[in-house]
Amino acid sequence: GQSLEQPSEVTAVEGAIVQINCTYQTSGFYGLSWYQQHDGGAPTFLSYNALDGLEETGRFSSFLSRSDSYGYLLLQELQMKDSASYFCAVISSYKLIFGSGTRLLVRP
Amino acid sequence: EAQVTQNPRYLITVTGKKLTVTCSQNMNHEYMSWYRQDPGLGLRQIYYSMNVEVTDKGDVPEGYKVSRKEKRNFPLILESPSPNQTSLYFCASSPITAGTGYNEQFFGPGTRLTVL
Image (cartoon, rainbow over all chains, first blue to last red):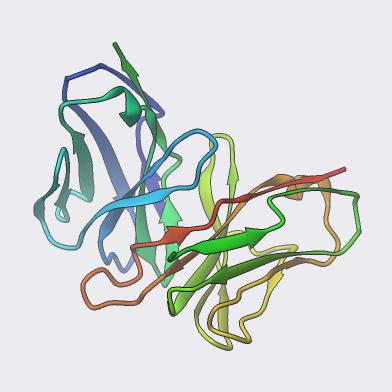
């Protein structure tokens, strides 16, 4: 079957760097995407990796290793507003499959 | 403003009473989808549509119906709601591009449904 594994919760200090990992098991892999969701809000798209390597978008970077079925989201210079849930997602057989999410808590 | 809208935002209903949640997007996106979100389970895809008149089941389609008669609209229908369909529902749309496929989903604000 298909599944994505990510840690349920991560805590970090303001200004620090945090990495949220995602391992996946799926057939017909087409790339890994990341979404952010604040409490009470809708998910918003952050990034997408189709090929191996690092994609950088401001303070956020996302990495993919297809051979290891693994990716991560890297958040730098953490701010209080980064406290949210983060989901990795893959497309498998035309369906979009999401991980169960990682709740990031940023402390002062 | 480019957006996905859903109505209603909140709904309390009783078992067996048919309901429809509307979804509309103004971005001319080909791909549309419905998800439900339950604590600890993330987002699970209910149905998706690659284009007008083309719909298919996601991972949790039981108890739901959809239609895609126009490109902008993708209503979710619960013919006979049951308490296990109490959840937070999101509609989303995405362009289908060579670069990202349909990975860049734009989500509506969500509909919180309670079935008593």
